Length: 303
Image 1 (cartoon, helix red, strand yellow):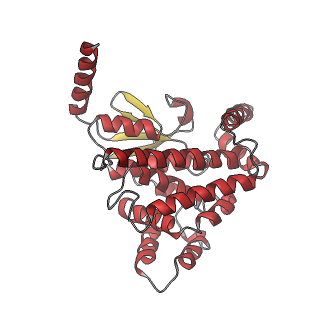
Image 2 (cartoon, one colour; image 1 turned 180 degrees about the vertical axis):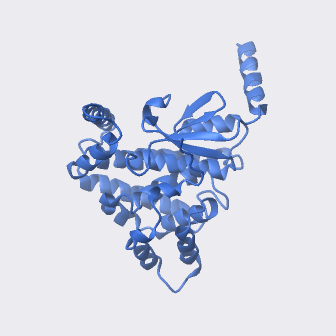
């Protein structure tokens, strides 16, 4: 057993010393016509994480990205010959290379950070799945987007298959039988916990971002994005928490070059005479002034 552990330790150390294959390729669904709430949030979270780690990457949209992924979930990245999927897996792989956003945290801090990551995944992700695949008002929109890139009758079959998988997952987790009001209430409680943790800090664990900052950014941005107008109820809940909006704008401004939203972020931070809610409402009321959602990708590569 000691020899096995020693061998594993040496392998991990050697892997960490290997040079990064640059650039990293990030695969995800098409943003404009196909991507859904949970997938978009996770893709943005990974993009933010890679930017925070100062790693170069390019985005490769694929209509079948979900089926290309080793885990069947998006996004996933290609590093040399390796494929690594989902936020946690990507964070772990990059951590094995010696790159981490949370190395400065003490053990208790790392435990707290993972707890908040779990909170976000257990609430925001499940709420997004519920809204897309259970809420009957949104279900037709979901089916149209999810199946838009596939021919008939494959699109109908894949929609049925995906919805069955989501319902099974939500049933196991106790979310499927919730009412929409209960889902919204869970989202609000999650926002309260995140806002209280953030308090007056720039990021959740001090002056520099950690993995949880990237994860929260992806979900808050997606849940309040005008590109998903059918999600206004959740967006209205999040607008009650200006600290979370400030956090989102701060990351947007620091790590993404995104035209008008950077200007809005600057105004959001420096104009004290205008209330945060008023500024946010103005941003939401003029979605036509924003670039298309697909332009959020700062290094988009389409073959």
